[in-house]
Image (cartoon, rainbow, N blue to C red):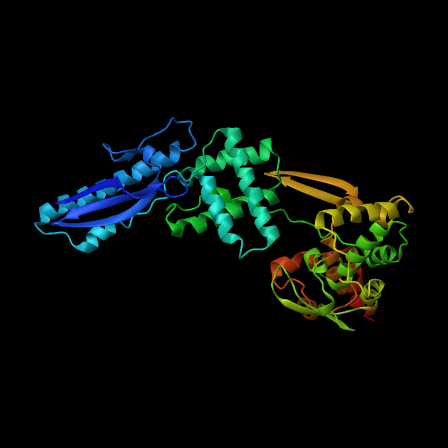
Length: 418
């Protein structure tokens, strides 16, 4: 005969006012106990050996109901084993008893977002500050979805129905583009993967959320002529001059914003900058061109090789720089040229022609370096050693770039025939 009981352990409550919930299985005059959760004593019904269910609209309702179903599953497993033992006329083994207690369930009272916060805490030491900030943004977006739709998020409810409702919310109501949708799903998937081995759920991530793909974007960069105009432009504003120098240094080295603002004098010698890239954690050594050296010479003797301007402000000031130059140029020429800004929202594609300065970001400095280096004839393998993408998928967008590059290839090949 196998029987199972649940009770609260008589101990001092923790800081949250909770005490352990114990499962005790009795068999053959033996007892095996295991802590299976925690709860506040006021939430426990001693007679029914279950959590007291709050009102359906209470934030804890779904978690409490889920935990009670878990207790029911344990009781059913014990009852099933007991019936089998009677039919087979034998005693239970300790292994069979412990297998019953191996079932996992998240602690009652912990909401989906409390678990998400636990996930965020676990990631602090292993992801960058900006990555963690992106995770928090996704967490808040999911919280808004829950509030706006009255849809209490739990692992068990992230299914096909959730996928339909969430997709409609994202694309119809919030009108976010596919890129951000994919980011949200990737973070949610990472949270799912983190939670499963910790016993918070045993579900598979629903396939319906994997159907959206990021849009294929064109590479926005400055041509060599545009880059040199920006490099040589005499800005009256010291603020614009500093961000121009930061950006141009990126254009001459391929460094991302995070690498430019963390650059130290110790990373530099007379001919080379050697630094571990923050995003990839790989060390790269990049020769300093005469233009990069000239930028560094402006700030020689200062504590840092270049000024530190946040990514948000750098993007804002960079747009201002290009717009300032565009006002001195002919319509449609150079800095007044138009680029296509594309948004894909679900299955709807929006394309708008906007001025170059409107669509420029600091990240285009890295693209400007790789693209112009290729146009000038740099060896692709050498560029990859200096930090250019090594994955074919990531590199492909640089390889199909401009008419200028295509013309150069044609001039260097077929135009030399005969």
